[in-house]
Length: 140
Image (tube, rainbow, N blue to C red):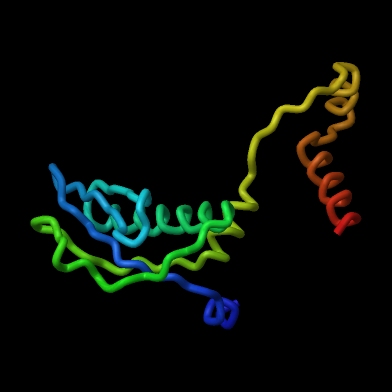
């Protein structure tokens, strides 16, 4: 596992942490227009920044967009009291977590089949998931 992480692609971009009221921080990336985050304090903002960066890169890759190269920190454009901090993400980890998250979906069944399944103790979600995975594997 550790060797896999060491060979995984990692991306680092410089984020600008801009102080706001009550100790809050807004976060943005000059290299990634549209990617922004915020936090209640600096540690929270840093955590939220890593999450936002990972999801932004995930969405760009899913959409087929070109991922820009990181540039040096934008020291000349710093807001007053701003902090520049490198934020690193591992895109494959984010993709794996996001693609494998559980999502809720509605299905339509005849009521007698739902009642019969419940009486048999059948977990409909698990049964559907298992069946769909088998169908997927058979086609791959």
